[in-house]
Image 1 (spheres, rainbow, N blue to C red):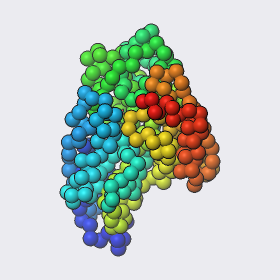
Image 2: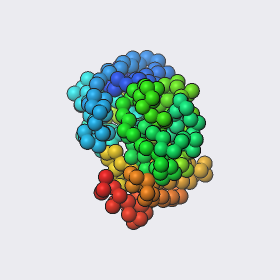
Image 3: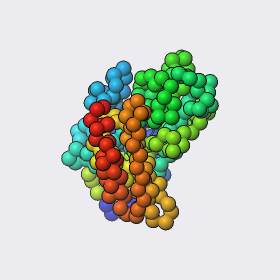
Image 4: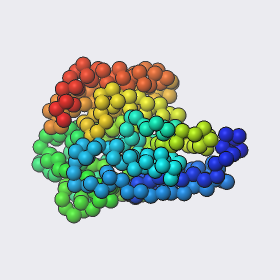
Length: 313
Ligand SMILES: NCc1[nH]cc(CCC(=O)O)c1CC(=O)O
């Protein structure tokens, strides 16, 4: 890999990263993978503080949405201080500034949400009126759809902050992406995995992507880290979110599976925050049509009234 003519000029790659434990894990994962594929290459991390990490007490949709997490990293690449940035795909906006793009999506970790509690084994085991921590409207609406008695309470911060708030007794349970806990070696914290039938994941959940400067030599070095299957699944999932204009924090789930025979199965959901109106849709088709399948599914949801739900958020 390292001797292809396109990459002979690049000797060092600088990775802009947020400073949370999970962001650093993901950046280090990409660093290790790059070093494995290109033993001659030197890879450095450039840790940066993002606005999204500073403004923890305010709902994300009030401070500019998830794009906050990527803006500082993009600025570092555009200013020439960094070459690439590693993102949780769930938090990556649909559009990129001129000069940047997202050429690589790495192999996916477990995409499910995890039920985390020090006292209870599952959603079903929670007592009447139990307090569950999440600030995701997607998680909130699906939880309330199966357990309208639950009290969903605001919870933001990085994974460790959220776990500390659970341990302090502020919540009976919290919901986190399984992927983050698994990557941080906190598997023991997962009381139960919540199946997509109960809690449909966010588009891209559990996958890491690499944003980079547009540069063929750089792309050649990154290419071995790309996972084609994950990329196809995320193309469909992200098309749903894009067609629904779900840029910021919205009650949208989308989840794609490949059937191993060239087919792609896609499920999508839009719910009202209180869980009383839940719109579900499913499509199946050729995996080469991932984007079109995502758009078709989103249009089914729109026809069922998704735009009214989303307009009221
Ligand atoms: N919105 C924050 C965020 N972005 C990505 C992850 C987890 C890892 C992933 O989905 O890849 C998390 C934390 C969470 O939702 O529990």
